[in-house]
Length: 215
Image (tube, rainbow, N blue to C red):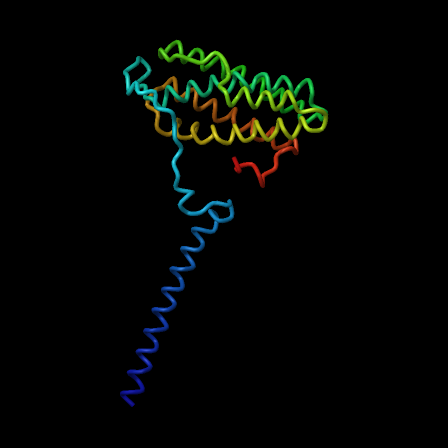
């Protein structure tokens, strides 16, 4: 009888241990599932947003410390306007649907404001700013210029949506980490503007989510 009871107790502990292990596995799977649903591996999800370091270190300003990340952010806001403003105007003029023309108008309005704010921040903080689109941006504008008829809308939507998605992570990082009040104010506004642009671009129906992050 004692042997039977001992065996039963051992079996009970084994079952309990198995249930705990199964629960842990299920919890881990649940944590990883959202990552898998978004088409990424767990390691990819831990990648951090990067920025271009100009080597200038951190300097003190009347608005608080100004880091290399802060300066890169202000420059990128300015760069965005240099190509997205003409892209938005093209959409207003060449868009064959109300949604594309509306997205163009929203881009023009948003980047007109952000461009002004970035120039003000550059002057106040002593940040040198670009005056023309970079090589990649010029290439994107060339693709839009070459797109004819029905090809224009998806080209416009894909290029602009991809660009906004990439900068969105930097906006969030700067808003979280900057100690400079002027940069934080710019990041606050950029967050709202970029999100509104992403939404407007997606409403055009020209964004292919299957290929959005393929490049």
